[in-house]
Image (cartoon, rainbow, N blue to C red; front, side, top):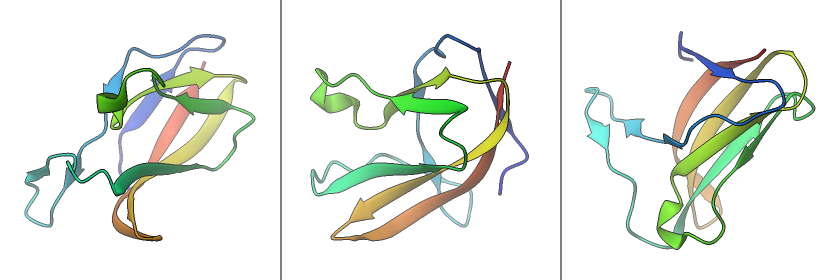
Length: 98
């Protein structure tokens, strides 16, 4: 779990964010170039926030926007999925919509 809080504007979207993962030594793991590895996520309360990406930009797999739907606090966790299982997970982040 992270102590960071992602702040999302109510009724609007964040600027684009790049999703990065870190190894046990806190080194950045660059997004995989293997097209079989996909970004996935889990939002605890999808009535508060949604995630979207630019569908017309195939190289934007790990670039996201969050859109605030309802004020409040929820969490999000990111995964790199490969062959039906999670290779990496981010841990949860708090998401504040205001």
